[in-house]
Image (cartoon, rainbow, N blue to C red; front, side, top):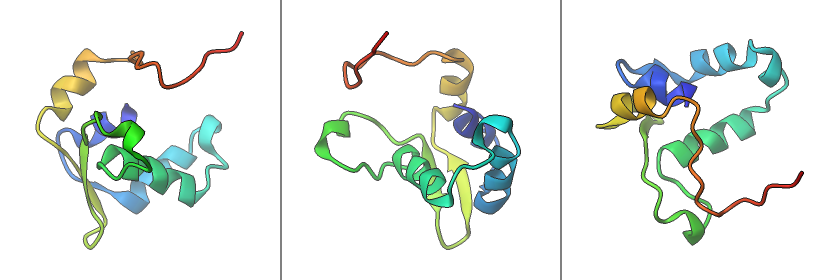
Length: 94
């Protein structure tokens, strides 16, 4: 959600954003491969057909190394603050 919100108004440099994300305590050891996997998902490169109903939220220009919000990204970032929709794709264990 933070990545979508950050890219909603202006393009963001992929390498710079990776350093910002890794600057937080929770993601200090985040591997670049995991980061890029998230960017793949957010830009519509899904690992299987199970995610077919999801829509891309970003445009990842790999040549320029930038992320740009797709139409509606700003509205989504503002109206979905912290909400993770239940699509029944993940089990919850307590």
